[in-house]
Amino acid sequence: MTNPLNTLTGRLVLVTIAAVILSYAVAFFIYANERGAALRRAAETTVIERIAYTAERLRTTPQRERAFVAEAIRDFSIRYSVDHTPGIAASDASGPGARVARAIEQRIGGEVRGASRVVEGPSRRWRVLREGPPPGPPPGDGQRRERFRAGVSDDGPTVRSTEVNLSVQLDGATWLNARARLPGPRPAPLGVLVGALVSIIAVGIGAALVSRQIGRPLADLANAARALGSGQANVAAPVSGPDDVRRASTAFNAMADRLGRQLNRQRQMLWALSHDLRTPITAIRLRAELVDDEATKQRLLASVEEMERLTEQALSLARAGASEEARTNVDLAEIARTLCGELQDMGVNATAEAPNAVICECRPSEVARAMRNLAENAAKYGGGGVMRVYRNANEVIVEVIDEGPGVPEDLLTKLTAPFFRADEARSEANGAGLGLAIAQAIAEAHGGRLVLTNRAPRGFSVQLILPG
Image (cartoon, rainbow, N blue to C red; front, side):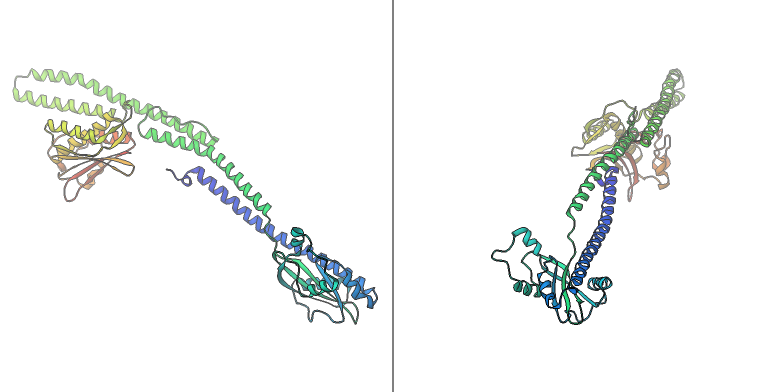
């Protein structure tokens, strides 16, 4: 099964989704930081305005009433008290407390001290929202003050916040001490995360649809090229998809059409030449039969037979891979056993080692012709051949081996060339030099190949490899 990530569609979708996720991650990081900073600035501004207003109000209040007025102020996030001494010994050099103190000092004047720390505690607001107010009478002012000074709030989920302590000088004898809570780190905005997830899914689906419009025509083009390479006639790729892909499909169809016409002309020329040679060869044979000298007659007839054999093999080479025979599933092991049996009846030393069935989709007559050529070559040049048929991964292999002298390494690549013969390297046998060329043409027409190798320490191997 094809790995989706190895296809154009899969990789386009993967790259698109990865780019969207990266862009969202960067945008979310920037958004979260800016959002947190804006919330902190807003909270600090609120605390500054409230404490500055309260300090200005208390400064105009008689000294004996200031403590009562401070206790009476009800603020959700700020608690006040008026004392004769500041609650902070020294102000922080930096941090939220220092910033708030400087801002209040600039606004109302006088000495202002500020300090801050990060605290963890239950959320009072959460308890009020989820459970309502606690049962029983509300705590008195004294109880509330003691709980505030102890840093205790109602039960609830633990949250982190910044506690800011401020001491504002009202006059030479009294100080306003305030404790405020600034919001700590905010939880991740789930709505933004859900929106990002939905956007990524939508972009992934869109990328899949767009890439499919590109990948599918390219896959059709690749299938058409594979079919053309396997020898099929009248191959055409569907013209669809984007303009660039359509132009590529149109160019391929034009190339396939020109190539088909050219191959047909060459085959027709070779067929016509082979066919027309039969008439003069027949005439020569008839005249040779009339020769009285028996020795001369036999020499002439031998030459005529060689010409006939060469003509037939040339015609077979022209037809190799161009057969209109339908492809079907056949047992190549059975073909090997039958073929070797027929060759043995004809006196050709060829044996089959194919006990197990090996099914392959092919043109049976063409593949049988290639197998026959390999077996005859092994018997002719190697003194006898053994034909093996087996399956390897996704390929079907027909291997013919012999115990002959082999072929020089520099000649291996030339053995499949038409009319090339390495008789001096193999034996004294004669031949037209078309057997391996025909076998290779048949293998390539089926999308396979022919592999020639020398065996150690002696012998030769020819493998007809077909797609399984």
